[in-house]
Amino acid sequence: MSVFESKPWLAAYAPGIPGEIEEPSETLSDMLDTSVHQHAGRVALDFFGSETTYAELGEQVSRVANGLRRLGVERGDRVALVLPNCPQHVVAFYAILRLGAIAVEHNPLYTERELRHQFEDHGARVAIVWDKLAGIVQSFPADMAVAHVVSVDVTRAMPLGKRLALRLPVPKARAARAALTSGRLLRGSVDWAGMVAGRPLRRSHPRPLVHDVAVLQYTSGTTGTPKGAILSHFNLRANALQGRAWVPGLAAGREVFYGVLPMFHAYGLTLCLTFAMSMGARLVLFPKFDEDLVLTAARRTPPTFLPAVPPIYDRLVNAAAAGRVSLASIRFAISGAMNLPVTTVERWEEATGGLLVEGYGMTETSPVALGNPIGPSRRPGTVGVPFPSTLMRVVDPNDPSIDRGFDEEGELLLAGPQVFRGYWNRPTETSQVLLPGGWLRTGDIVRVSPDGFVTVVDRIKELIITQGFNVSPSEVEQALLSHPAVADAAAVGMPNAAGGEDVTAAVVLSAGAFLDVDGLRAHCRERLTGYKVPRAIVQVEELPRSLIGKVLRREVREQLMELPNR
Image (cartoon, rainbow, N blue to C red; front, side, top):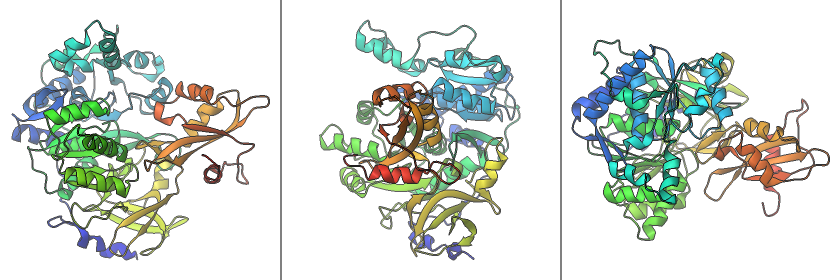
């Protein structure tokens, strides 16, 4: 019997936080409909100052859903999304769900090779794509069955004044426009604007069910190459309800959420695409994190709730210290995806007068599972305690049937309504992480205090977490090994000053080759998205291997840590 069955962490909950949430009976589509009805005239989306009300959002979702239906999308079909943060992303996401189809999120910064791997895996016939990438998806081989590519010009969601400014015949305007749009509709693609202008979906059209699959979210999981995590309406709605219970100070219809996190990432998807919409909040969208854009928006529409990662908090605090903006409107801030330094918490709370707390999660938990209480009982330096309706165990990592106790290190296991259904078409990998009773093996070594606060000690998994994203070492190694100068390679995460990790590679060179770091990094950039490219590449004579020939990445990391001036 686990010592954690008594749930000692409940005593640390902020006043009024329930130990259990009522399990969701409505889908994400139902959730949005409720917000559209209750907050019809309020602003739902804010993009460079261009506003979309909840009533307008609901109407656009209906029209795009009907457009997708006319393209043949049916319940259970996968529809790929390759978009930055923009109003069209929100509309497309909920339009897909309204049909009972499955939204498959993709990083729009991925290389052609990375996108192709994921498209081969999920087999979507319809893709809604940033127009800058439409040509890439259209060029996929015929046997990949992408029948329709819907091309999205994100600048059409911007205010007219800004759209006109992008057309000015000056270098700065041309560069800004080129970063946002290709400026043309490719032959054979479907124009998004035409779908939005079409007829709405019939109200009688069948709706999804609460246990239907809603999203495939690609993740490297606890090991290996990216896999599609299966998240249901039930999973995602439950996590939004857990988040709402955790922050009782938020007021429905009155909050301003800042969408600086990418919505193709599980963290941004839940905190912005689902949680914000469930609250009837104004969601201010940014195509990417740009400090100047955020500061400009904050002067116009001050945020009240900010989910982000530590480097973003540090940069905004520095801006506030320089007198460039006031952050006093932000009452609540949630940090995740990487370690949150205590100094960042102290500086943020001094600058805002609000609270900054750290949470813990993974794509497989939709994604949030633990959080620091929103109140005096929070404990900086820990990832907090289990969310309502969430259970945990700490076990022997070599035998998860053996439970560990308080203050004993072991692997964290989680169970709750937010735990995913498994990996798409990968039963073997699913069985390795989902145990009987619905327990998820996280791959993280933790230590739990007697009052239930969790401290992450180490990771069994060899994933590298950089800038809040998971990077599979094998992907980086394959890119390096495709270069003729590299005979062997190992990729690891090295700690950086911001509390995260940098992708670092150790390479053994081929006979007669010399180390060209810039050349190897350029080679990787052709095959990997930017955050996966090694920040540092170190030459070694050989790599440590096990008796069966497997590279011992932990030993590689230890060796690199011992290097002078690393």
